Length: 240
Image 1 (cartoon, rainbow, N blue to C red):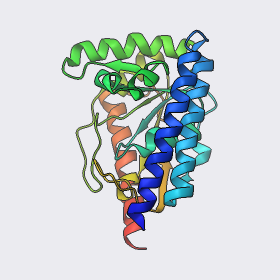
Image 2 (image 1 turned 135 degrees about the vertical axis):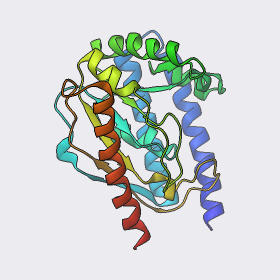
Image 3 (image 1 turned 90 degrees about the horizontal axis):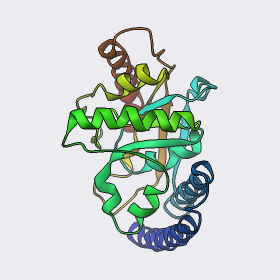
C-alpha cells in the first residue's frame, strides 16, 4: 500500500509541478515578490499532497521564537521536506543553494525564477562573496534568507561540519539568525523514492543576535542550539 501511495504522490506531484512551471514562466516579467508568492503556493501544495496522500505532516515547536523582522533561518537539512514546509512556516524567503540545481529540467528553471542565492560550492571564496552580494539584494526586497549550515543533507543521528557562511552573512547584512532543528530524515530518507507517514517536528530556537560575538562564536551558538534540539526531537520519535 505504501508503494502505491507513493506512486500516486509522484504522479500528482509531477502534474502539480508542471502546471506551476507554466504559471511561473508566464509570470517571469512580474516583480520578484509576486513570482515568489506563486512558487510558495506550489511548495504549500506539495506539502498538502504529502499530508493527504502519504500521511506525512508537520508540527512546530517554538513558534513564538519567530521574529517580526526579516532574519536568517539556519536549518538542519535532512530531506527535501524542509525546503517545502519552511515556506509555509516562515515569511517569504529565499534559499541559499548550489547552482547545479538550476540544471534540473523544469524544476531548475522554475527555481531560478524564485530568486534564490545560488553559489558555487567548489569555490568557497567565491561562494562567500556570492552569498553576501546576493543576500543584500534579497534583504533589500524584504526577503528572509534560509541557509543549511552544514551545506548538504545529513542523515538522522549524524552531524556535518557547520560552515561560517550564515554568521558572516548575519553580520554583513545585520540580520539575526533563527536556528531550526528538524527530523524529516526519519520519514523522508536521503535519496529514497519512498516517503513514510508520520509527523515531522520543526523545533524553532530563540534568535541569535548578529552583533553579539564573533563569526565563530555566533556559529558555535547556532550549532549548539540546533544539535541540542535535534537530539531531543529525534529521540522523541524513537521512543514512540
